[in-house]
Amino acid sequence: MKRIALATAALVVFAGMASATTLSSQAQVTLDTLAPSVQASDLSPIQAKLINRAVNSNEGLTSSDLATILHN
Image (cartoon, rainbow, N blue to C red; front, side, top):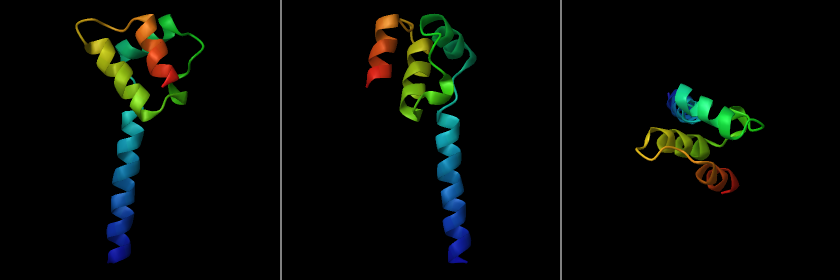
């Protein structure tokens, strides 16, 4: 029983990590426009989350914002 609980917990963690790396369609278009050489699959979950958040903000995502996200 303990093994099943641990396996389930591990799957939940990995599923959360996988969904966190997904860019919204707007974020993907913005990334392709501002940094065409950057692949979304190469982004860390934190970078993807920051890009999604910036694209959906009132200010939008600028090239300098993207550079900061990609270099940190």
